[in-house]
Length: 504
Ligand SMILES: Cc1cc2nc3c(=O)[nH]c(=O)nc-3n(C[C@H](O)[C@H](O)[C@H](O)COP(=O)(O)OP(=O)(O)OC[C@H]3O[C@@H](n4cnc5c(N)ncnc54)[C@H](O)[C@@H]3O)c2cc1C
Image 1 (cartoon, rainbow, N blue to C red):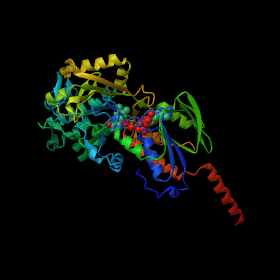
Image 2: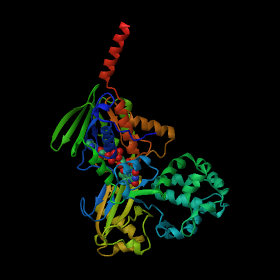
Image 3: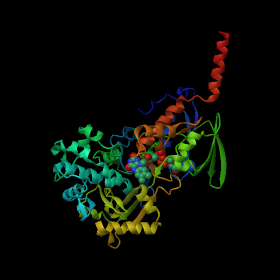
Image 4: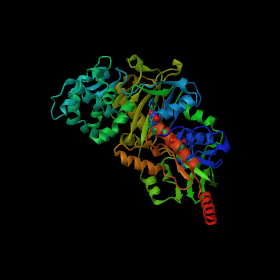
């Protein structure tokens, strides 16, 4: 299991002496790689194409960088408390006092979800959800609690999976799973203020057999359902970008912004980077390079010296897009509607709507994360121009929240389409549909170095699409570089060995 590295006593402590390492990308993977390599005594510099650090951890501040107003998390927004590497760095960087509960989908009984009868409050949705769920079953001779389990599992999947993916998963909540659950007393798992929901986390944790009986496709998706609806998820009070910023402040090596890598040539003992700096293009010859840029971007670069298998994985790794649209509102109107936080499942084009806590000066307003979409749902929004997309989201959402139609309620809109963004061309690698063995084979191939060129980033990890995965891959890459012996010294060692062999 990946573990943060031990501190070295200084450069002389680095195995084989200090190495000069160039890291491409100042997202969390690049920053952790640099931080860990420096702790081991190596010399690091980071080159970043965009004009900011953090990559897919991006906090949009409506009053401008460093301003006191409300902010929206346009990238990563929550950390499952079980993500121990991420929590380790939060503690190490002195951010523990910023950790707050993250309230997620359906955590507030007053939040909404759609049904054939229109929007329902979570607290009153059970009867309708059960009726709708039971209608689709070949036999409805299940106990009421079993149907309640099926209905909430189905509702959670519907809220988290993109529409096209949901259809398959919905059919996976089948007879075998329900028969098993029917034999379990679900009374201890009833939850919610009206005790009309089933605590899926506790149920799956206590009954591994239930989880094992899920069809493979559903089983593989369950981690995400459980992570995203867990009650033990956290956030950083002053914004998730505190994590990359604190890390960057602890790195001694230079972090250069606005340096776009446009070509990578791998040679036996060096790696040459072609880098665009404004109007100039320069080449840099490096001893070691760690590439953390997403493969969606990497595959557009000029690459030489890569083996064919590596090129194949760079070109074939699948990414999903994601879109987030945030409204800066005059006031947190949802509080008057009884919603104190968490998220609604809005459906339609909007999909998920989050109510971040309004913790700052009330005069500065509050932020509503109006829409969060992934996969084909994000593609549908991305096909529209920005004004059309924002208007559609406002229109659909105002059916649930008519307060949005009040003049002056929406002060500003911020949107980010990660599929179109030049520096990511996608939100994250998705390996939901794959068998565990195939997932691991793909991960290994993504991470496999090419001579002095190493790879890190969420796509190289066992937890893709999470900060945790990016950190895991960064620690692995730092380990690999620490132990890597360049070809020249291998040849030198081999020739020494053969000479001593001869003289013996
Ligand atoms: C919408 C969204 C929501 C998410 N929600 C969560 C969440 O709630 N919790 C969670 O844990 N994770 C979440 N994630 C995932 C998490 O943000 C990522 O897994 C993680 O930030 C990826 O880090 P990385 O360093 O691998 O990649 P990146 O952050 O993408 O870093 C790569 C860096 O390389 C730079 N770069 C790209 N091309 C070049 C080039 N040619 N030259 C030089 N530099 C270049 C980029 O600008 C970037 O800074 C979310 C992601 C998205 C998009």
